Image (cartoon, rainbow, N blue to C red; front, side, top):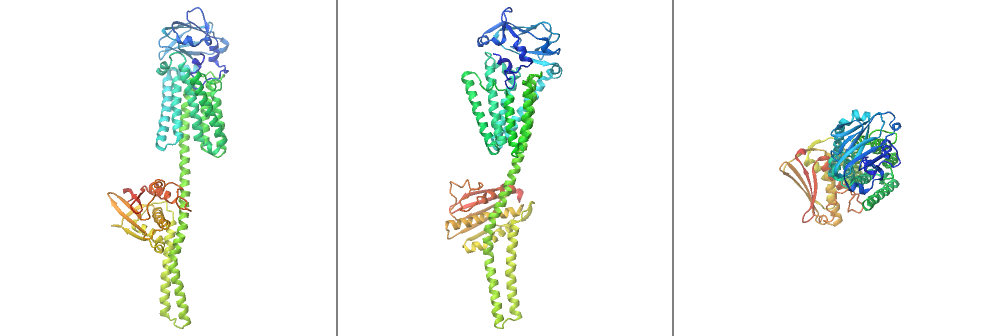
Length: 579
């Protein structure tokens, strides 16, 4: 049952590591009658199932082992069971502390268990920890638990907000670490509840360790995006998860662990660090923060388990784990910032793609807009030529035809300006006439509508003025009108109609664009605003997605769609702040 004592570590100590405390435990003996002593490591399950009254603990201390240094032993046992010791002792926070100095005899500790189960543990402190930390131990633990609890709440709220698994895994990891530290402190009410027969603490800590390892691996996979950057490492991590789950199953069935007992936890941490370096080499910048946070944890866990360190392992973990929590909170924040920047870049790319896709549509509309003026100019040239050949070209006739030609050229010039303004990107909000803006979009499609015999009714009661991004708003109107035109062509609608209504509703403005193209199938109506979803044979599926992004994110309004009796109705809500 040696694990009862050494499970106060956050991770299990390597069974071959011979630090100061373990060497003392090698020479620890226990007696239930005050005469006959048996080696502590020879206790079995039956000894922990029985209840005792008197108990004597003897530790054979080697002077050479202490190297003339002063150490202190903290006695954790069943409440009020400590009686006395042959070395000087004092009580700090009602817990006995024995001072090891000028060692000449074996250390003898007497207990009165008062017919209770066997439970005690020893914690070893050097003089620095005794003078500077031990009296403030509760403060240290309180700060540690507070930091971990805040890290849990911080990440769990983020998970509830955006449903990303990385926040769920890390928040659950913080919970498991919190319980581990509370149990490892051996100084809480929880430990007494679990300590029924000397084995429950063992199993509980092992399960928490396995759970922490599982959550650490899952967090590693999500944070480093190993599936994308390092597929082979991603497969290896899944293998580790399988082994960990197998170890949990073995623990529940046989009460034995084949991983935790034989593999030092800092080896697992170091392995995850190596994986992070491979991801960093792929150019993934957040991996650097992961390495910094995980390396700090590796250092403190390694120090808590190393044979050359005489620092209290419990303190090492109560400092290292909250430090890791703080570093990873910054790391996750940086990752989210990077993700947001990538999202913004992708949206910019989508906007440009949307504009390029619209440009193809507009070229056709320019052709419709220019076809009649070009034909008219051709007739003017033919008339001038015929008049010249028949000697009828006088000044009055020439001025008349020149005026006609100038009007057509001016119309074509306005068309170019309209299309140029449409593609102009403005990063500043401006105040403009809502009616004029919609009319500009209608004019771009006017000739196409005429050629397809599409009738358009534009209804409004007053000339509303709004303040937002004019170019982006005009693009949305154009996309919605153009989509209606494409649907008329696809469905071969003969009596095609589009109605645009502007309605003032309380403090908001509603813009309705209604067509009679047959409506949208109920199976896909909830998907039409998703990126790359399209029903067009050669469509890109970004027009409606970008329209929704522009209205709801950039402008701050709302874009919805519903079916009417004869077709579809798109509704743009402009709230009071845009009016």
